[in-house]
Every structure is written in C-alpha cells, then in structure tokens.
Amino acid sequence: MVSWRELRDNPRARQLLEQRWLILRLVREWFWSRNFAEVQTPLAVRHAGQEPYLNPVSLTLQDAAGAPYPLQLHTSPEYSLKKLLAAGFPRIFEITKTFRDGEDIRGLHHPEFTLLEWYRAPGTLAELMDDTEGLFKAIGEKLGAPTVGISGESTSVKGAWKKKTMRALWQEWLDADLNNLLTREALAEFARARGYAVTAGDAYEDIFFKIFLDKIEPRLGREAPLFVYDYPSQMASLSRLSPRDPRYAERFELYIGGVEIANAFGELLDAEEQLRRLEADQAHRQKLGKPTWAVDQDFIAALRSGIPAPAAGIALGIDRMVLLFTGARGIEEVIFHTLGDQWEQQN
Image (cartoon, rainbow, N blue to C red; front, side, top):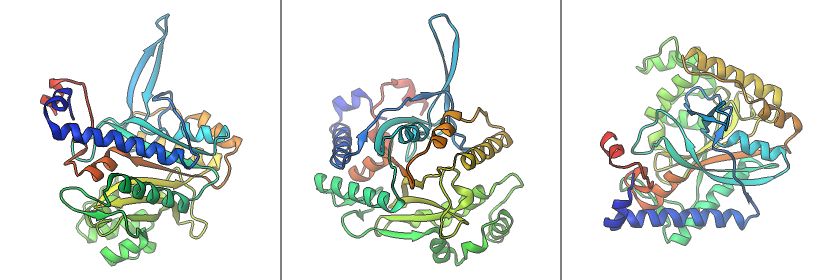
C-alpha cells in the first residue's frame, strides 16, 4: 500500500495514484452521461450477506447512553442497492469501499478495496455486457491505452470482446461435458479421477473451483476480454435461473489477462425463493463453523414490494481495473493508506 512518504518521494507511486483518481473520474463521467444516478449506501449494516466464503468485519457502536449496536462492514453494497431499486430508482451506480476479513494483502486482493456496482431495473445481462465493454473502451480511449495487462502481458480492450458459456470452457480445456457434472456426486467422481482431493465437507462449489481455478481460469481473457456466462445453478444464490436451461443460472464474469474483473447476475426477484437460498447459505456457514447472523428481512421485504423485471446488476473491482490500465505490479501499488510503518512491517 502506498504511504504519503512514497507519494512525496517516489514519482512512480505518485503517477499511479494520479492515474487511479483520473480513472475514478472517468468512470463517474461515463455513468453520468448515460443517466445513471450515483448513490451512496451505508458501509456499516446490521445484516451482512450470507455468502459462505466471505467474512465481514464486525464492529460495535454505542449510542450516547452506552447501549451497544453490533454492526458489520459490508462485503458488498448489493442488498442496499436492491432496496433502492425497490424504492423506484431504475438505473443506479455506486463506487464504495468494501471490506472482507481474511483476505490476502498483496497481489490481487486486499481486505479493504473499492467496488463499483451498477444496476438496471429493468435490465438484462446483455445490457450489462455492453455497459462493461463500453466503459473499458471509453476509459482506454481517454487514457490513450487501447491495451491493458498484468505482469507484462497485454490484452486489447479496443477490438472485439468474446463471450463463452461455462460449459464451452469445460469442453475446450477439460474435454468434459458440464451437463454431465451438475451434481456433487458426478463432479466429485470427475475431480478424483483427475487427481484432485475431495473431502466429505466439500460442497459442489468447492469442488468446481478446485478444477476451474487450476485448469481454466488462468487461460481466460488473454487474447481479448472474455465474458464467461451460464454458471451451474448451485453457484449463484442471488441470481435467477436461466429460462433456456434452469440447470444453469443467469450469471457472468469478465476475465482479462487471466484475472476476474467483474461478476454479474440476472437478479433473482422472487422473495420467497431468495429467502430459501439465503437460509441455505446460512446453514452452510454454520456447517463450516463460521459466525452466522439473521437474514436481512428488510431486503426480503424490498423484493416482495416489487422490482421492475427483469433486473440485472454487476460488481466490478476498481483496484483491479486500475491495475490493468496502469500496469502496476499489484493492487497494493494503487491503494493509498495511512496505517503507518507497523502495517508495512506486518504485511
């Protein structure tokens, strides 16, 4: 992380931070020009998300009488933004600090990072793909940077972007038909045959990512940015199922240079189905021995009140976007901090 001393004494550090701030300005201008409203939502919330593998940072505030109020720093503003959709704001975006405990400090991760989320209601995944491609191309043109990359690699954002289903990727890189691997039992058997260790506690998603992160993800988005869509339904607790094939969910991720940049959902708007999925995630957290908390019933109430359908939303990592456009070695080079020398010594 960049300290004020580095900004004073190191021209490269200063240039990277200046590029970051310029990119943030360009992001805002792009959304404003397309009539998206910029919004602000709380960082500290009573109910964090239920994702089994994300860990919120807990804190306790006190009122003037000393009464405690347990809160959590959000891992994503998703619930709050969907409440704004329910309140009648159809095209919104937010650039916000996000917190996840237990993250690495360097490379592509940081416990405090900046997230861009935007939503369309009504809206589709195809529109979000167009938004994302248009945003990157506009920033690349403004910066005079038609190519982006990490660790010396280069990927053009100026040319045609690609789209592939998750099933097509498994066929291409593993010679496997994902249609035959949509149960935990079938996927576990496939993984063991390929030499992966599978334990009784591994859920479908755990097994899937053991294979995907090893054999497929590093290859993605190297020739051109790539949208990967149609994820197995077990891996999208906040998205609706595909009307074309309900074994898959309406979800895509964007990859550039082997790095995941954004994650998008065709939003699940059925309140009762959403409640059921969140309770299942809550039970999974408990099974993993992780802290649990109540489901955000205000979020469920917002879904019950009605959000224009279809709706779609996406989260994009600003720090990774800046890394790509600047060629920084890791996101620690594009994040300013004031935590002092002890932080550097410990990390």
